[in-house]
Structures are given as structure tokens and as C-alpha cells.
Image 1 (cartoon, rainbow, N blue to C red):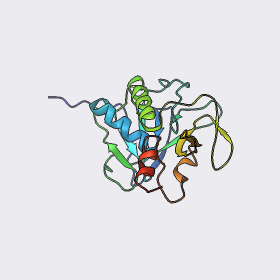
Image 2 (tube, rainbow, N blue to C red; image 1 turned 60 degrees about the horizontal axis):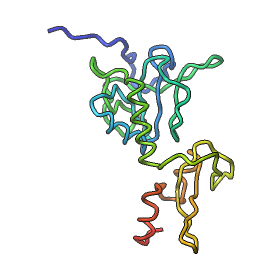
Image 3 (cartoon, rainbow, N blue to C red; image 1 turned 135 degrees about the vertical axis):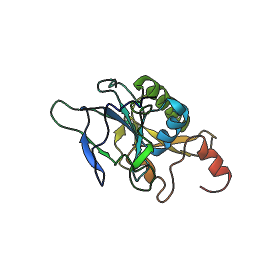
Length: 198
């Protein structure tokens, strides 16, 4: 039996090391709520995944395999840019548990890069499940009052006629609504109100 060597392994290090994106791989960053759903959907079809101390997940994908038209709220594509370098903090290969940055799905001969098309499908499903359909046009963020192309529904404001107004936030401010609590999805907001925990 022969053991296949990985095409790339993190350099020996004793701490997280900033490595350039676009040399060995590109990366896809997803917030914890979207990332966890996508990881579950991918199951055994996921490649190696890094999780940082905030719970954000990073998939490694083939260089140049990401299309720029992905429209998922809070998801970022990390690739080399024409005029500047992009870096990803990569933990030592032996770090496989948290709470610090670690390999959530450890790197191995059968777990290296994730197929970009499968990842796109899993992220699309996670985005719909977590936030519902993308609204038409830009929406104002409740906090910064700036229009956002990535509106995240955080609450439904009840009105006298029974039709609720959806309150949106940009990805930066969604975790801050309401102060001190986790953001709610459209499906959880009415249930939470019914339970008396608004």
C-alpha cells in the first residue's frame, strides 16, 4: 500500500501563519451560520476546512475556480488580486480542535481542495435556508442606514394590518441586532415573538 503525498501542506509553524491566496489555492470564507449549514450539506464531499476563533469557516478551492458572480450574504471569495496580495491565516496541520484557529476538517490525502461547484450549491442552499429569498433591489441597513446588496433579514416589525415590515441589516451589523442577542432569521422571528422573547 502506498501513501499519497499531499500537493501542498502548511509549512512547519508553531502558530497561525499568513499565507498568500492564489499560490496553492483560493479560499471561500463563510460566516458560522452559513458555513455550518454548508458543511453539513457537503458531508464527505468537503475538502479541508479552517475554522477561526470566531467560528468563521474557510474552504480551500482550486486557484481560479471561483466565479465572481456568487451572491451569498456574508460569503467572501479570497483570491489574488491584480494590484495587491490577499492572505489567509493558516494554522499548523496538527491543530485540529478549537477554540483558536484550527483545521475543522483536517487536511489529508483525500481531504484537500473542495470542488467549487459543489461548494457553491451548498452555500446557495445554506443562504436560502438561513435568510430566505434575496429581496428585490438594495435594502437599507437598520443601523448604518446605508443601502446594502447583501440584505440580511433580522426582524419583522408588526403592523396593525397584520402585514409585517422586514428589518434588514448589512453583513457587518446583522450580528449586532438587537444589541446583545443573536440575529434572527425570518422564520425564527415570528416564533420568538410568539414565545414572548422579543
